Image (cartoon, rainbow, N blue to C red; front, top):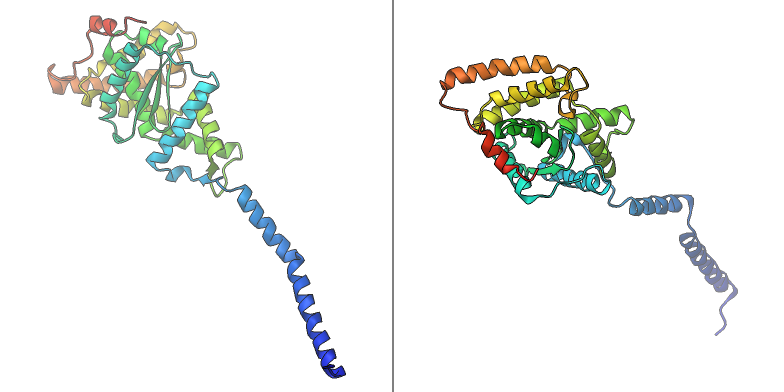
Length: 288
C-alpha cells in the first residue's frame, strides 16, 4: 500500500529527529569532553594520596618509617653492621627502654650502623640507628642506654613529623591536602641524616630519655657522664654528631645533673644503679 504524501512527510521528519539525536549523543561536546578528561585524570592519579602529618595513625607512621629505612639502605646513606651478637644486645637495651616510653605500643626497631663517627639518629615509626663508633666510645651499658633513650624520645614525641611540617612549608611543598607519600619519604630521609633538631626538641628528648632511663632501672648519672665525656673529647673542636645538633650542651648537662642529684638523694643509693659494670659491657660488645 502506498503511503500518502502527508504520512511520508511525518515519517521522514521522525527519522531525521532520531538521526540528529544519535549524532548528538555520539559526538563529544565540550561538556562531555570535560567530563571524560576529568575521569581520565582521576584514573591516572588513582592511588596518589595526600596525608595530613598531624593525623597519621601509628600504622601509617610505621609504614613510612619502613619506606624511609629501605631508601636509606638502598641509597647507601646507611650501611648496617650485621654482627648478630651486637645487634641483639642493642635491641635488648632498646626494647627495655621503649617499654617505659610515652608511646610503648609502637613497634620500635633498632639498627647498628657501620660507621666510626660518634652519632645516633632516629626517624618516624620507631626506627633507631646507633653508630658503631658511639657504641665503642660508651664506657658501660647505662651510657649507651642514655643515647638510645634519647633517640626513642624523639620518636615518642613525634619530633620528625613536626620538623617535616616546617621543612615542607619552607620548601613550598605543604598544601591544604598535605603531603603525598613520596614527599614524606624524601623529607623523612633528609631529616633523619641531614637536619639538626631544634633546641626545644633536644631539651624535651633529654627529659623523656632521662625518665625512660630511670624507669628502666639504669643509673641516671650515665647520661651526664657520657655527654661530658664527648664534650671533653672534642677539645674545642666540632663536637661529635650526636652533640653537634645540641646548641646548648653545657646548659643541658647542668639541667640533667640537677635531676641526677635529686634521684640519688631520693633513692639513697639503692635504686637506679644498673648498667655501670664496664667489664660486662665490654664482653657484650667484644666483636667491635
